Length: 354
Ligand code: ATP
Ligand code: MG
Image (cartoon, rainbow, N blue to C red; front, side, top):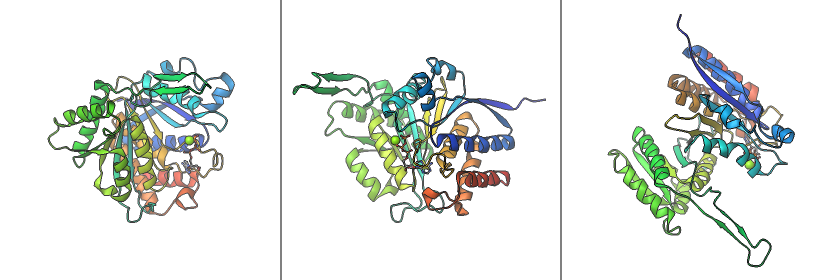
């Protein structure tokens, strides 16, 4: 008897609607696993804000060690109205990204069937943002001096390394080569005169090795405008940690709802687990009502399946979502009346009939 392929996935549903959309994703993944001949061994981790209120931290002291032997991490959301964002970010998300060297933050955006973009005439948008995820502007280097005095100042350093820029550029170039060949790099070398010219130099020297890839370096301010005016001009965008954060939220908004957009925090060499999470937060305003859109979580699970080496199941999940959206089954954020459960049940039916 042959043993089914088994993947060990740590599950951090976290806070708010994370508790509603993560179970939707595990049900759908289990259904796909049945059809495609593999198994997922889920390891539930009750970490997040509730854990914080009990233990004074977002995850156990040895949280990173606990996760380190898994194949992937599926995360819902962490955040609580009574906890400052830096507590939830630096207490869980950022340590996981950094300790597991998840230096790629991948954010695909597509306008799903039947969804109306807030931009007129945009119904076939298909863009991937490759954001540098462990260095750059989000650095702990710096400080505040002369607190409270008139002379007080804050200094915040950005750190760009040749290794860091090379590897994100390489990942983006490979992705561009597998798509249309168009790669846009976000820069600001006219105003940020040390790190951004360095970014430009390294990115363009990496991309020279890729024959079929055409690189355009665009100032991030102009790029933000162009993404709204001519989104179809773009396919793969590579950006630093801060610029990538801002641009990917902008593009995700063009896709109709924050409830749709997925993200992957990837360690490409696979020395450590990668983490998959929707870009939305805990959404305390709608938590517990059963109306959250599970699409961002489901799409993140699809990215995870792809990363685990199950591309057929990953594609099957995306076609199931497309089918359900095309059939007009939509959650409230997209103007529909389906609840999380209705939408998930429809996706499960689409999987079963595929
Ligand atoms: P956090 O502090 O965890 O980031 P937040 O409220 O700041 O939470 P989001 O959770 O991203 O940020 O929510 C922003 C808005 O989008 C809220 O009004 C929320 O209800 C809505 N929203 C977010 N995710 C979804 C979803 N999956 N389905 C429907 N609405 C959503
Ligand atoms: Mg928030």
